[in-house]
Structures are given as structure tokens and as C-alpha cells.
Amino acid sequence: MSLSIKEAQERVDNWIQTTGVRYFSELTNMAILTEEVGEVARIISRQYGDQSFKESDRKKDLADELADVLWVVLCLANQTGIDLEVALEKNFDKKNIRDANRHKDNEKLR
Image (tube, rainbow, N blue to C red):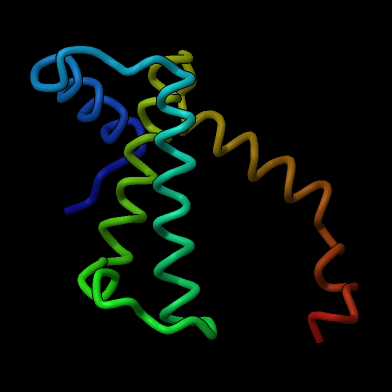
């Protein structure tokens, strides 16, 4: 199944309106986003880094945790009136101009 960013924003909004009762405040969602990013960091530090897994961490799924991060980002975009498809296109334009040669010229990346 393919899902555009716009469709994802609409589906999250529909879920919030029908099942979630209402959006949490932007500040609460920012705190939730921080928690979710922390969960992603925990998995990555154990799976790809030097830390060992605690028994309670072994069942955590990176894909699910990344989806949780995306969910909250979509909520924040909806709440603040941001069309993430438009914002992402503008971000690509910015990076293509600003970073056109930056990474190619970076000795550390060779």
C-alpha cells in the first residue's frame, strides 16, 4: 500500500476526530514526540550501538517506534496548519541549493 503524506495527514486527522476525541495540545504533542524519539534512540543504541539490550527492550520494534514518531509529527503538522507535502518539497529545494556541493566536497565523506 502506498500512502502519500497528504493522505497520511488526512487519515491521522480522521482518526483523531473519530476515535481520539481531540488533538492533545501542541506542547503535549511536542513532549510525546520527544518521548517517541527517545524510544527510537534506545532501540538504535542497542541494535546498532554498543549498549546491550535489557530484557524489557527486546520486544521493541524499530519500525513501530518510527511510525509513532511520524504519527506525532503528522499531528503537529495538522494542528499548526502545515501541509507536509508542500513543506518537504520546499525543504528539498533548500537543500539542493544550499548543499549542492557541500557533501561532495566533504573530505570526511570520502
